[in-house]
Length: 268
Image 1 (cartoon, rainbow, N blue to C red):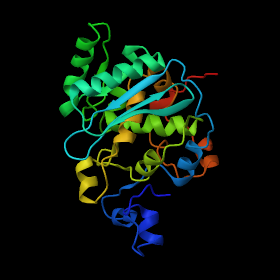
Image 2 (cartoon, helix red, strand yellow; image 1 turned 90 degrees about the horizontal axis):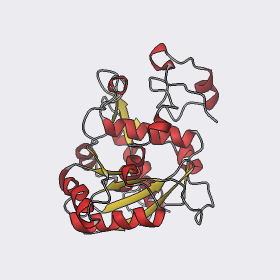
Image 3 (tube, rainbow, N blue to C red; image 1 turned 120 degrees about the vertical axis):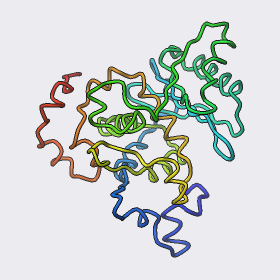
Image 4 (tube, rainbow, N blue to C red; image 1 turned 135 degrees about the vertical axis):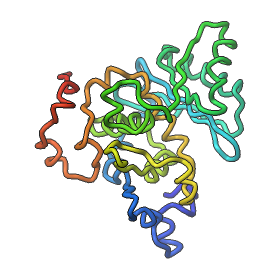
């Protein structure tokens, strides 16, 4: 159930007799789990493993040094799935896998988002070169501030915005094909409101200090929301949106602030 991870909370408690790692986060810093167990269980409740993605967005998280892997996910309006994984990567090898992902899903290159930090910075150029300048994808630096001024008031950086989009997509019925590694990573994603009240996702450096692995699967899936402006305009930003453990009836009764009211666009 824990994917062979001896440090998974369930394994730590039921097999090793240790406290869960989540207990380390119950401190003055205010970190809390972003994705509840209820949310995760609902998120993977689908039997659509053979369904074809329609007009998908693709997210590519390029592995760094050491044991980091490169991961690629595809997602359409209703369904997400893992496409490819590569243990030891180079910009060229990731570029080839990304091109293959575009071809098999029939995605538009402009709807492909690649983590543009570190070794990922060269992947976009490699894709253009290998495709004879026929494919131009989007590089995204998730550590930077959001482009939208309204988003900057709510999110610490682009990574926090993308994580919140994933959370809201799941709440609205978005589902993912069964994926044990992603499920384990979602349990290790923590968030808090930093001093200015903005949503912040626990940095990877802090995760390493706590013994948590780099969430490459999560980051790749979150990147599928970078170019999805249609979905972004359907969900409000703000204080009442990232408390996954609150009862649904309490969420629905809460009023939308004036700051976020323009985000509430009706849709079918």
